[in-house]
Image (cartoon, rainbow, N blue to C red):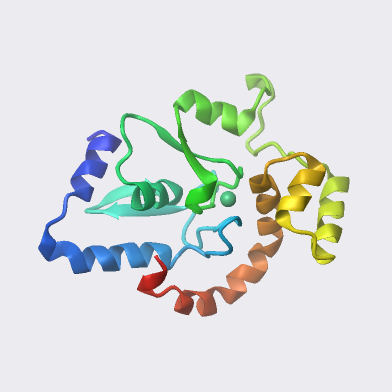
Length: 187
Ligand SMILES: [Zn+2]
């Protein structure tokens, strides 16, 4: 079955399913470490080699976590579109960092203008090592994400990604505490 058709099938529910749907949605967001609205929200469950979160849409239908975050937030995806990251953080499930694009957009998003023969397995780092050190210093001195993005001339989501990577180990330790904060009213 095509992905769109599977999503339509999985999205079909009756009034009697409402409570289980609610639990289903809550169980998904419980595995997302939600931060501020402009920060990356990393998937804390299993991940694939590409770094994308691995989850399912129910009924045995597998789906990447960020795509599910988009569907739960914005509804069914029309056509054969991909859900892409503005922040270049494959594990991120913050709907504000996601957008719809074609497969061609997906490749451009991942590799930019790097020729096919020179593409590595990873993603392109927008900030240099010196800029990353400067970013750490700025953040420690209380400079906002928005201001940092402005200083480096990059999208705020790029700053979020670098900040999130640094916070990731800490976030994992806090996971148990954070999960208890994700009550149903938060989703
Ligand atoms: Zn993000």
